[in-house]
Image (cartoon, rainbow, N blue to C red; front, side, top):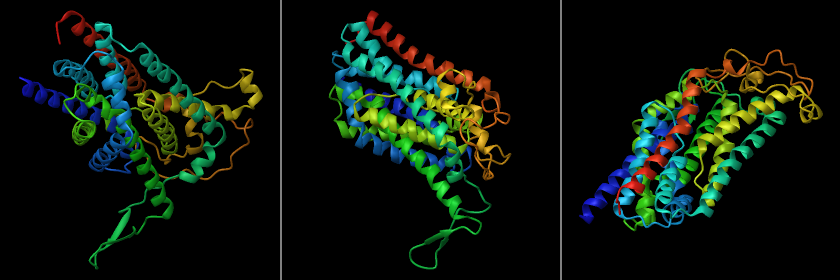
Length: 402
């Protein structure tokens, strides 16, 4: 019976990791895929490699928090299976509709439901986790806001990416080792910009692995069924499986349906959100990348919009109403590169000093976001963790599972 429960636990952990891969790959590589910088197959391969690296290097702290510290209840094989089942089903529901859910909030919710039902929740650690959940989006907002207000136009000039016809690289195969060179139409600027976009996606995959591998395997480590690093390898492989299969839908949602976010803005958001998530993972705090990234987008748009006013006007409440559409002001050419798949390079332009910029050309948020898709994403981001928490609480409260 023990062997059967162990095998079932491993299968459920794989199911959870599979759904994490489907959700996180869209968040990490949706911008690169949506702008035709990277194929879905290449994105899946990179997601697998860097998520596993994040899990091995930073992830053990999060595994320890979820598997041993959050609840005092011992994770028996059956309890582990039930908890992982709720995590996996909740994430599967979000992946079915193509929306990337917060895997960390879902996992913490399911484990917290167990702790609440049994009266063994570590309230101090839960308070610490929730406090960081509240603080980290605020940090993301303000860091991105500062970048948007003071540095965004410069970044647009530095990282504008044009996409030429033909291959990015050509390979000379006359020797024993193929030697790469820039493609016939590839410029150095295009090559560097492409590397930056892909590199940021890899960094996001690393941070996702650091925070999310634990969500798939922490209960198995907590009950002693698996040691730390074999469990992380299992979780990383399961995430890779999801990246190569169901992640295609979430990559479409993030890369094409949700927003026409300019590539420069996507790079800023990814760098800010990934850094915060990796930092929290090193502290053992499972973080919600999706919520942090969303607040980073809002902060970047707010900072860009407030360039039209002086700092004193902003403090006095006279700043214009911010919209994420403000991000496109410096990339307003019809062929400006966006996450939604448009290509080209913004035309160089003189940037007016802060407080003197015109707002006439700042588009509204509706020009940048699809309202229906955005509403669906926000709704499910809150519902998915709630489903896992409530289901776990009810089952462990009223059923004799030991």
